[in-house]
Figure 1 (cartoon, one colour):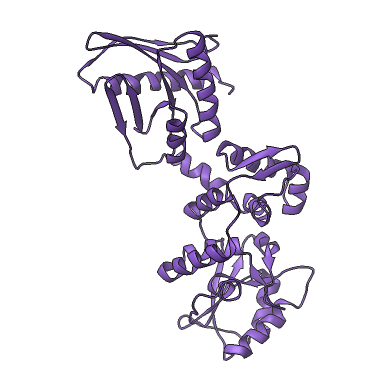
Figure 2 (figure 1 turned 60 degrees about the vertical axis):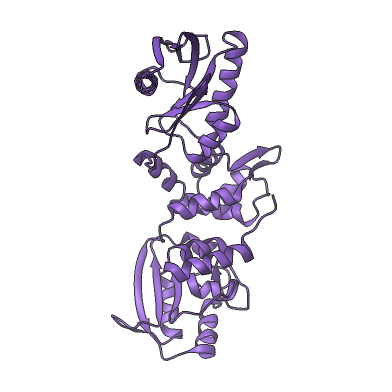
Length: 360
């Protein structure tokens, strides 16, 4: 990857310090010297450490990456293998990055790489030395980057791809179908490739690990922004469903409202009923629901909860499991259920088993 001199100089200095501190924890290891390669060096690695282990000399060669995403782990593995073939066949290869997720750490093990990150995670195995340290913390920038993948505009791209994960997309077609700019698609594409949740074929970009993508989205999920409104209606059971379906189906070309959460799950993969009905809507949808369902505002004891969406893009990704039963997609319904308490989690797991399984 392209390294900017100033940022990499700071990162490499931090990497040297972290490596030195880690090695000094082992009494049998004496550090002979640690060489920091200048940016632009043709030796192919960033740090070379020479140590003495109870009278035996050993060399550690380190590649420093500014990102610890899986794609960059593979790049580092390739660089380190190439260096060892030509310069240091008996050395121990190590990847150093600001942060390595559990998935990236697993990939390091698969590639037979030692690893060290600046959060404190480490694994070194050579001669008689075995060091392993795992920490639970995750840097704020990593959390922000993950959440940015699932912001409203980016989420529209992901919803389109998750409809058929094996379909390959050209950037322009994906932007058109998602209703976002080419720039948004390009950013999502880069993030998916970095995490190896997607690959590129001759036909374009496709999801190679949709389950991993959905897991990541679930873990970072925040309910859609909007105004939550509580209502009461005298309509119940079949009368409510009939009135709601008429309102939702009133305009086929543009979706203004949809069943959400438990109410959507009732149509997609029934698991258990709740005492309230849940819907998403834009301003037009709220007006239609208010009239069709005879809604009256209440402060407690609501039987209908409507969220007036700040970003109504998710209403473009709906399904119709029965005439007029316009529901949020299985992906959106699953995500909403995961943050709806214990019963919601159970319903989410059931929905995922029924509607969100993909062939490997």
